[in-house]
Image 1: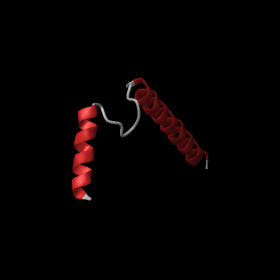
Image 2: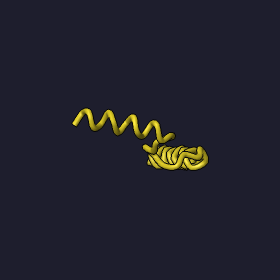
Image 3: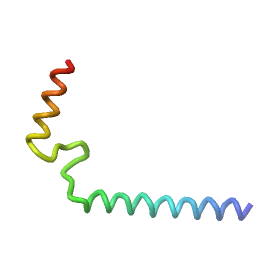
Image 4: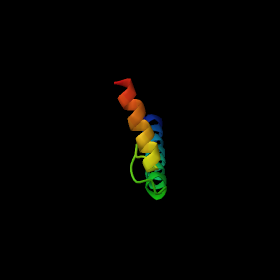
Length: 54
């Protein structure tokens, strides 16, 4: 029983560390938001393609 508990604890700690590291990386990357456009031209090209599709 202790082995299962220890495995769970190691898994939980490792998962927490991975998610915390990923969060720090995403915050530090300097992106304004997920899915944002980098340039006004990129946004215009996307909007034009979207309007053509509709």
